[in-house]
Image 1 (cartoon, one colour):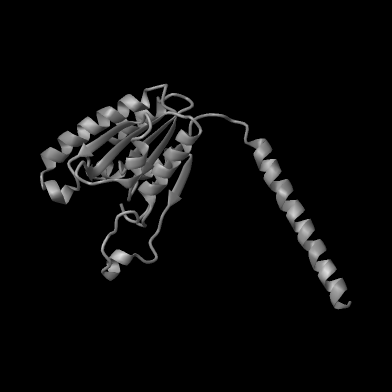
Image 2 (cartoon, rainbow, N blue to C red):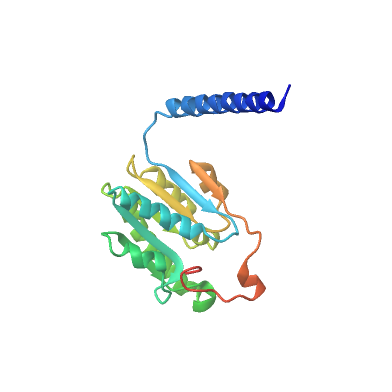
Length: 205
C-alpha cells in the first residue's frame, strides 16, 4: 500500500468513526425527552465554582429567563464583578452580608444572617416566575449547621417543576449530591495565590 492509499484508508476510518459518534450522540439526544427543572451542584476545592454558577445565570438571562441569586459567605463589602454585570438586569438578589466566618468571629451573628439568607432562598425556591436560582456557597451553611439539611431538601423537592437550581461551594453534603441531577467537582492543580500572587480584580473577584 503506497502513501496515497494509506492516507485514503486513514481518512475513511476517520469518517466512519465520526459517523458512529454522530449516531451515538443523536440517539442520546432522541432519548432525552423529559422536561423539568435540573438541580446542579458545583463543588470541590478548586477555583471557579461561583464563577461557573454566575455564568450559567448570565446564560439564562441571555435567553430571556428570570433569575434569583442568594450569596452566602461573601459579605456586602466584597465587590463582585459578576454581580456588577447581573445587577443591570431584573435579578432578584440577596447577599448574606456578614462576610467570611473568620471575619465576624461570631457564631450567633453568622447564624442570624444565614437564617435571613435562607428565608430569601425559600422565597425564590417557591417563586414560579423564576426560571433559575443560584445558591452561591450554600454548602458551607450545611457544613456549619446554620441551616437544616432536611429543610433544604424539602424546599428543593417542592420547588416549581421547571425551575433550575445551582448550588456551589466546597464539601457539599452527600445527600445534596445524591439529590442533584448534575454534579461537577472542581479540583485544584495549581493556584497563583499559594505561590504568593495577590488576588486580582477581574480575575479572582
